[in-house]
Structure formats: C-alpha cells, structure tokens
Length: 246
Image (tube, rainbow, N blue to C red):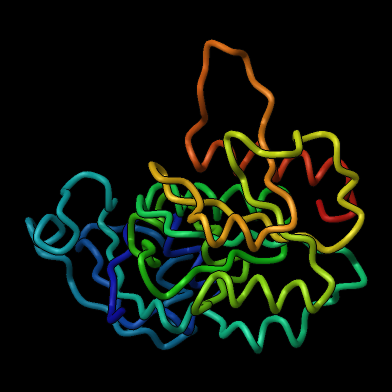
C-alpha cells in the first residue's frame, strides 16, 4: 500500500500510545504547543519536520482538519497476517470478528473499525483486493481505534471463512433479505460477521459460504441501512450477549 498520511492530534496520539511502530515521520506546525505529543515523539525517536503554511493542503487535500499535525504512516506495519492472528486467538472465549467484503468507502471502513472496537470484537479482517485499505480517512473516521483493535490482512474472503469455520466459527452474512433476523441468535459460539459492499452487498459466492444470512428488523418505510450502521447494530446485539467483552 505504501505510506499514507494521517492527520489530527487525536489520531496521532492514539498511534503513539498504542502502535508507535507504524509512524515514520511527523510534520508539525511551528506554533504547535503540545508537550505530551512532543514527549511521545521524542520517546519513540520519531523524526519530525516543520509543517510549512499551505503544506497541509498539499499533503492531505485539506487545510483545516489536520490541526497542525500530519504524520506519514506505513499501513503494512499496522496489519497483522491472518495466520499469526488466528494462531493466538482464544476461541474458547467465543470471540467475534468483522470480515470486510469489498467495502469501498474509507469512511465506512473507519466507522466499522470504531464500532468493532466499541462493542468488544476481537479484530477487523481486511481483504487485500477490491477493498478500501487503511488510509488517513479510515484512521480519522475510526477516531483512532484503528490503532487499538487488531486489523488483520486476509486474502480471499471465502477461503478465510472456510478457515474460520474449521476453527469453530459460525459465519454470518449481513443481508437485507437474510434468512435469520437479528435478535434470534444466542451467539454462543465464535462468530464472524461479514459486511458487504455498500451498493452490491455481499458477493453471491460469499453469501453461500456463510452459515447464516442475517437481516436487521426495521420499519417498512426504510429499505436498508448504511453498511457501517448495519455493522454497528449487529455488533451491539452481539455485545449484549457477551458483556464480558466490554
């Protein structure tokens, strides 16, 4: 993926406190007065440079949102290989993971990561292809949670679901016309929730690979929910059955 830019004090502080290895260089506005931030940069020996006026817009395409703080990040250092993740996961605790299936909008990806962290999921699994990767917009929308919850790199979604099933996971595909309704399942086994593309939904082959297709009951005046909102509703319902995860 190469380097990406993250921006804003909060996102950078989260990175420095949780995964400082991903930060390569930080550009700071000359008038920035933040002793805690500067102390963390010094602690982790991260090089800094002065953020010249107008440079912020050149780097991240906006001038007002970066708060005088822009960092270059190596997203590959943030992603965990799937084999490493699954080898250390305690399936006896009946964990839940989110599996992204061609979610294209980075703001949706960031929001899903934030919800997964908020409701106690163990990881977000992100395919290498046909999928929005970890970008500055993803990190910003996640409110820094991209640095707190494991983000796992996977290859083929269907192959990953097969492996998860072999590890005892039940796989749920979020679908508007699901065969099961949210609220009817006890979630008493390890689970993987698959969130599909914003427009096309989950690919047919992936839907067929899921044990259950899951729909959210809603008022008839509304046809569907945004992918990230749907994920948050489902994660919350799972967390109600697993208060120990919160």
